[in-house]
Image (cartoon, rainbow, N blue to C red; front, side, top):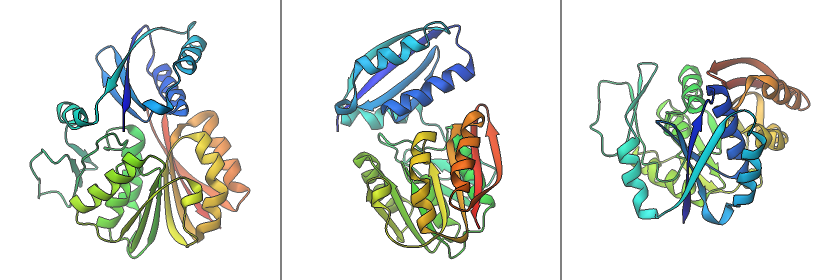
Length: 279
């Protein structure tokens, strides 16, 4: 699959403004982001890219900060080399070590996850993924049925498997993420994971004890009703990919329509992750 790389550089941009822009870019279809010295780089499937939409988005921010961008085609075969240059190992809560295939193992950690990200979002480095992993590490997943929506690299599902989950379904609309999920499950010797390519319509008519959904506010709002249909009573949902205000309130209100109540949330910078439970 052919991707386009957009290299953004800024003057006088605040951290929260950059996070808001990234969220808006995700709504346009950009699915992977890398920090750089003067901004960040974003990737989007070439067939999904409409430059006029990007220009319109940046125009809305014109009074807030100065922004330039350069576009470049990215060949599939160059992706692993890009990640090898930029992907450093990560430690979550001193117990989970996330590394790429080209890093040395660290058997001293209770949990080690090997990720070959390709073009998939989800190496643990983004605040949303980190917070989701913190929630998962604190949860009781032993013998639980788990659904991971917008799974990216399947890092969350793989961590759930290592914590004793009985069965896992990992779904992403991007076929690169679907392929990455299968490969990463094999790298981590996870044999009870079913990978599916699609969106809410791909969710099997099964019951789940736990759902992970690290996507963005608009997609979550659209899919919550389907999550409610497949989540068991007293089942947990962990959400991330959005901001505190107004996003968390909107998601809480939508969940309440289906008997899913807010329990608590975490915040890292401007990003939020939250825990919900079905009544």
